[in-house]
Length: 68
Image 1 (spheres, rainbow, N blue to C red):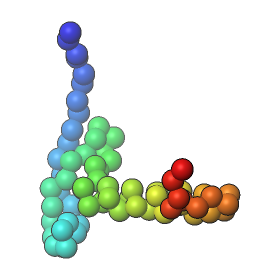
Image 2 (image 1 turned 180 degrees about the horizontal axis):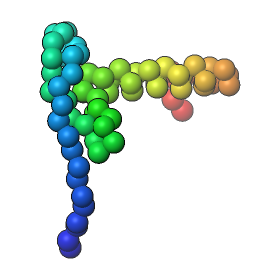
Image 3 (image 1 turned 180 degrees about the vertical axis):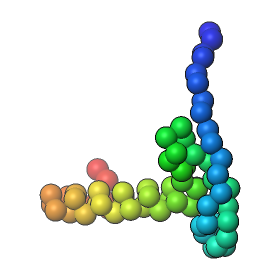
């Protein structure tokens, strides 16, 4: 089986905070110039999404902390 995929990555420098350290960092970018999030940023995004989902479930009368 052969897979042929085009992978386009860029690397760039940007000021940001990672692991509590503010400085210039190297980041990966996709072919459209969008920066890939750091693992720390991915966790924050996932937590934010989970909180929104939990709130929506509560609005629907469902307790998100109870699993049946």
